[in-house]
Length: 406
Ligand code: DOR
Image (cartoon, rainbow, N blue to C red; front, top):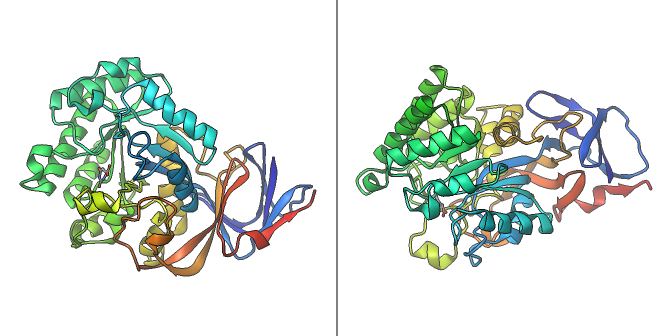
């Protein structure tokens, strides 16, 4: 499989230049001027080419909640959003606490050949809050554990889980929510578990990834932890927590205040925040009506971040690429996220000037639950390429750019 993309402006976290890019056998083979080959090629003049995005946090609801999403619709939604890799949460039905369930997800995703997936295992068995023996039975290639959707209430269980994770060389992803306190103060609830988990990670030496960080205090604690030399701690923020404040929309953690949004953006600018994760959480209209928290966000993530971070003048495109591609890939140990020879041929072509409006009825995800409906955004995904083959093409301007030299 060979593919040449000509005429795009290439941007990653380290370069920005007008060059052609040639991919062969799934990898980036050459980046240079006036490249030629007897193969399929794309005329990408006027478009920007980025390393495809890596979502460190998504829910595809498969197995068990297929009325909300499944690996087919989730995979197609991810590709439409410019993602070629998703790290899936384990709050499925059954919960991903054993290799049988994890292998079901892996095998189905491999057969579908849409996006690549890593399926997280739960920290506590079936989210029971305490049992950890199942961690000893996981295959070595399970790289991350999380009870996302719930906090781990028992400090001792979290401590023991971190010891096991450290010994196995895997990452603990923390959904920092002190569940008993949520009813009193959701802010305190996030802050307390954030501090606790940073202390536990420092003490045990385990790798800790704090996900969907949403408060000013939590970001400050993470900044302090990192400044103290804790290089085993990373974190992500979501597109919705960096672009909205004081809005009533049911999601966990909740939409916060303006000063929290400002603090998260400050954290992005100074490098405290490592990654942007979508927390793509599709629900049926009925479940949403009943109060299920979450946002179907994988199709709008780039547009929201481009509009609210880059267009708003907070960061440059290269830094957005680090947050959406390079850093999540590095955390997950993937050969993705950079435009250099030898990296996976996972790239995305975007039209940065294209303005559009968010229309949830056009989502390919089953989840139409979004607070961004009707929002004007800038930037559109035109083509998503994984391993050198085209996996998504926008209806509007995809096909007319495709040529075959063979
Ligand atoms: O809003 C959320 N929805 N936050 C979570 O942590 C879980 C997720 C879900 O699974 O619906």
